[in-house]
Image (cartoon, rainbow, N blue to C red; front, side, top):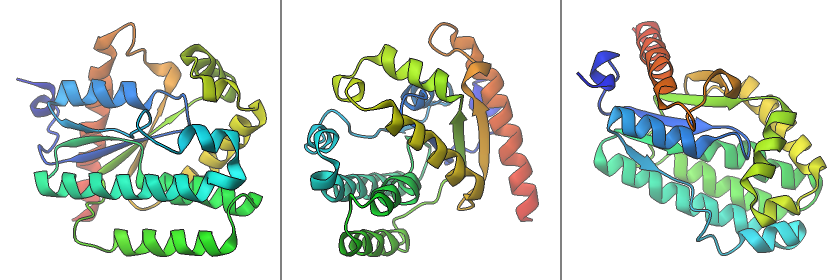
Amino acid sequence: MNLRTKYDIPQNAVITIAGTVGVGKSTMTNALANALQFRTSFEKVDTNPYLDKFYADFDRWSFHLQIYFLAERFKEQKRIFEYGGGFIQDRSIYEDTGIFAKMHYEKGTMSPVDYETYKSLFDAMVMTPYFPHPDLLIYLEGSLDDIIERIQLRGRPMEQQTPVSYWEEMHERYENWINTFNACPVLRLNINDYDLVNNEQTIEPIIERIGSFIRQTQLLKK
């Protein structure tokens, strides 16, 4: 019996992993997908033509970056719909609009006109029949110090050049966002409660919690 069957997780479930930069979303996505025999949906970082430019000049490239992410994520949502679910998704489309685009608008690095255009596109996308809302959003949380340490260990040049104040603000915005998020059920996991890099077996207690959480939310819907 595999872990998906053992803990009664629907084979067509869509589970999204959310959390700030460096918190371990990709590691969790791979571990869950392997354990549950699900497909993965990853954020396309290495092929993003705007990311390096964005980190060098927020004012110039924030709108371009957010539109690129929005388009890529919508294509992924359509792919998930066409497969009929059974996916673990690295980062949600909700984070783009609820955190990143909003942050750049509030800080003045995205113009009001660009922000309204972005929001209009987002609203149109989520209303289409090709947009499957997640059955569960797993929010990976940790202290700011732990997250900054992980960013430093990862060693991506564009992240190393980013001021610590940016990561501080991002951490605070994520905490504020998740506290009011209600588009789907949320399961919080602290990054210090497991170690998927050094101990793959720590994935089973997480899957057990996921199965229990999904069952509870399904009962509440009845």
